[in-house]
Image 1: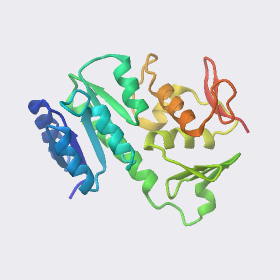
Image 2: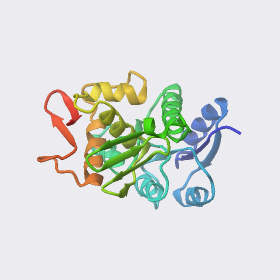
Image 3: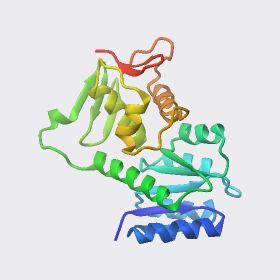
Length: 233
């Protein structure tokens, strides 16, 4: 059985199309046309990724994203029919890892899915037996790469896979500035970044909120205007 993917879209043709392409890649697909039906699956199935349409009847994709994030860390990709920044920012702020604007190319959708699952598996896999190599520490911040856990001042931080990846990159490059474009390519391993893409910015803001880190007087993630982000040594 392949990786388990939840697909929720009230447009039957789109949901069916996504299902066909994912099954062709040997993924196991749990397809639903309403969020209420999907919630039952979420509560009973060990999923690896979710694809959620934003404009769902009764319960929106945003609400469903929140429901998932309260309990699970697997990647979430949002589908939006609008090419509006507010929808993308809202989804990312609520814990989504990526978004795809309709109409989309099915092969690009598959590539996004593969990229997210690859990262999710990487950070949940058992790496070296030498735990010291898997732990990054900075001023009360402790990140265990092996167990995919992160705590700040002994309080567990609930991070999405993308947030974990961003923080890991910054910690591994402590003292150096990492540009949004460089970070984007390290995480997604592809070329769909553009200068107008504010995905990283939204995830950074969400990280700061979870860490209670002030934008103006940051103790951890500092913005270097026109260059990128860094964690001071």
